[in-house]
Length: 402
Image: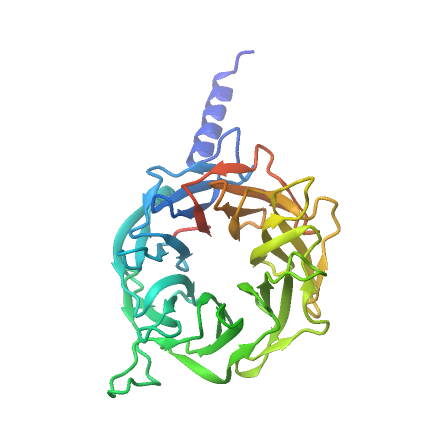
């Protein structure tokens, strides 16, 4: 078939527009950039997320150096211009926070590193304004418990500056440069004006109030919150509810429990009516929980299983009752959903279409389609497993760069 001159011009115009939008006949354009950490080679894998399929393609120049040793946590600043990587350190290599600027097509450019006040940084959280970064150290300068180092973020360069503790002083009268937390902290999350830290040493949660203008943390009357957990592995804080993941197995639940709370006055945690919720049957060793961006569904990553017929890591899926926060397993014969081995973290793309897990043992990222009406998960249309930098830990997605 021959096209007229007008037809050829029209076709050329459509193709040029599609190319300008990053679209092809096999996809629908890039809806976000993903960066996944890998500890084996201290690198960051970069991916572009296809709108139509959810498939991941490598960003030019990937993998990128993590700027340190043993990268374990990553956050992106509001607006998407800067990314911060927490390098835990190992052996004689001290931990740090590495800053990267984000260029076209998600390319990362190293800007510099910053030192926390304690040792062995393991997690980072950012306030919603993107003005302050809270980095969790497993050991404070006194070497007893953990601490949080607070940084302010420069709007023009993304550089970090220390925010000292204005409330407490050292025995010699000098100002503390950190904010103490409990024993063996593993993760910290922010919701509203509250910052919660999970302390695995005694299965407690340490609560701080936050000041949105200064970044200061203030203790509350009940800063140390006891829980019923026997092996806390993560905390998830949505807009209304907080969920703790307890990997402590019992005869009733080899997969542990999810402990649901509401946030009360002075950052207290109030147990929801009904208490802890058992993980799904045949699951075990839950490592992480994730609430979708619309706070309708809760997903739990299970690193192992008791299912001898299908030995795989899985995702347990629950609905969140919008009136009382109670959890109910999603009705689906495929729930829990199999994924790559050794899942560590989970994210959702900004268009609410896809979720992804970083899998430490299989060295992959697994992608799933999320049904926004039911919370059910299904495989991507063109394959759901993507190779990632060796031993991936956590990952993050940015939808735009402003």
